[in-house]
Length: 110
Image (tube, rainbow, N blue to C red; front, side, top):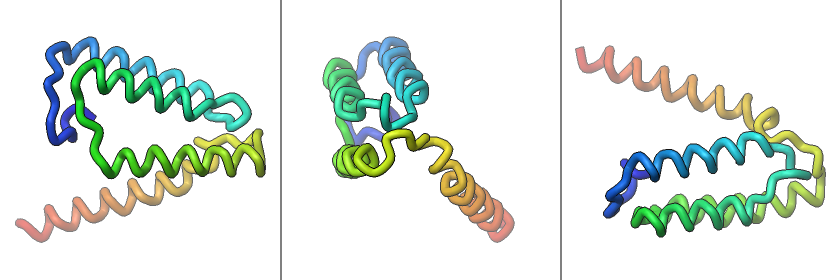
């Protein structure tokens, strides 16, 4: 997030990274919809960004809002859903497409 932020005045990058790592660790330990609380997680994310003066990109803010809506819907449909297990096939497919595209572009540039 720090490198993608259009503006940031972060003076303690190490502290920022430690706090972000703690947030990610907390999130990945609670990927079941019955245990993960997206609202507080995103609230903590915003607190870290504000504390370290890192601007949240508007696209990411839209994604945060969408995730909160999907969380509520998912929780009502299947609270035991493992988000990571459900998302893995899509993430792998996307990563494979991106890798292939990168390789093709490198080959084309030769």
